Amino acid sequence: MRAILVGAGGMGQTWARNLADHPSVELAAWVDVRPGAAAAAIESHRLGGVTPYDSVEKALAEAGADFLVDVTPPEVHHDVTLAALAAGLPVLGEKPMAANMSQARAMVAASERADKLYMVSQSRRYNAQLQAFRRYVQSDLGELGMLNADFYIGAHFGGFRDTMESPLILDMAIHTFDQARFVAGRDAVSVYAEEFNPRWSWYSGDASASALFEMEDGVRFNYRGSWCAEGCHTSWDADWRAVGSRGTIKWEQNGAPTGERVAGDTGFFRALEPVSPTVDPIEEGIAGSLAEFIAALNGGPTPNGECHDNIRSLAMVFAVKASAATGTRVRISDVG
Image (tube, rainbow, N blue to C red):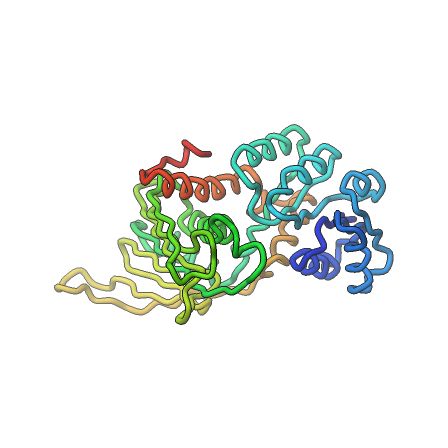
């Protein structure tokens, strides 16, 4: 299947390697609006036969592609996705889906009009340890009551993140919020949140936040995070704890999940036994996203990140923003 790749920045180049490694994909065209950027990237990666373009519309008209991969900045996702869907091409896009909910709704509607798949690559779902954690939560933990995620990373990026209004929530938290929906098997109902920035932070916008979500069935998801936390870093996937009627399971530092299960019904502290869910190997990260996308195009099941589902994760992001701005609890339906 012939692909158009849009975006030749760092992540775009990572996606180029991912596309080149897939046995069923041929990279036909690479687009970047910066003059010469796509051509330089093609030469750097020694991708003979790939045509460079500086216009998405021209690539769509000439490349004879079967799908498009969008690795542009979030504010560009809307225009690129609508152009590709209007041209009859399925789209696999990077997160977040859009820069606001209005754009996201328009993108979902465009997918419906074209009757073409639009999938957002929520690549952190494709983690073998996370999937083992999720299986245990949904099958062996009993009735889920609480899900916690801690994200503490002192990231000195430089560049655009240093001047973003809300670098943690707008650029990174979508991963953790989407993982929470994936693990719990439930959508968010409401949230109370605060954003803040310590005086010593090197970000100009709020780089720290706390958010308490009510999920369906009364489950609570508690998010605590900071992108200016020096020392004792968590995993980039966050450190997790799930508490249910049959015990507790933790997933920390991207290791194997471990926990304790209730093994008796008497005593001040009930007897407990250790549990270590089996971790089955999977295709991880963006390779997993691409594999599931291609499988769906070939008649397979609806993939993770399909736009009608992913917009529910994006709504959690903008609900946090609304709650932090107003100091009130915000229902997800009010933003999404």
